[in-house]
Amino acid sequence: MEETQEKAMRPEDITRLFVERSNAGDAAGVAALYEEDAVLAYPPGSVTVGREAIRRLWEKVLAGRPTFEPETPLPTLVCGDLALTSTPPRDGAGARAQVVRRQPDGSWLRVIDQPEFVTPSGG
Image 1: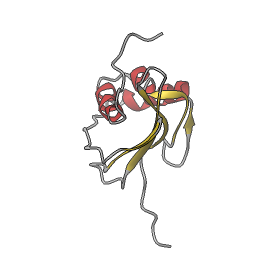
Image 2: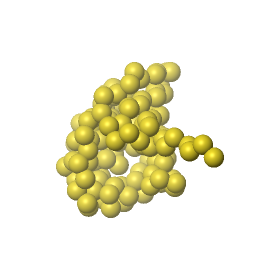
Image 3: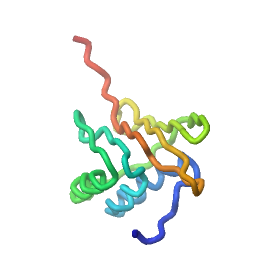
Image 4: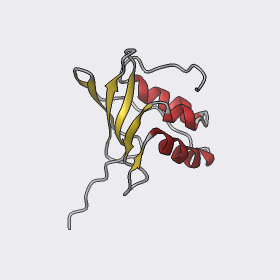
């Protein structure tokens, strides 16, 4: 499998690891932050399902060598083995939110990822 990477031992760690791995161009490392059947609402207007599909998507995104800036997380809501993490994005995209689940080893992985909420325009 993949080389030993730092695991997210707190839900909030995932955002930091995401930024570090994205900026390193590590698509497999980004995908490793998601459960096997995770759902990612990206690209905008579509859904990417599954760790392997997420890895392929991030290979394309990271090929352009984008730079991600750390975003200060909002307070995490935890209910048993589930947690809701969110950040107010620097790019003004409204909000980012993720549902993460505690794994048997105590680490956390993303299950549902909504990286952009766009404010609906008033019709």
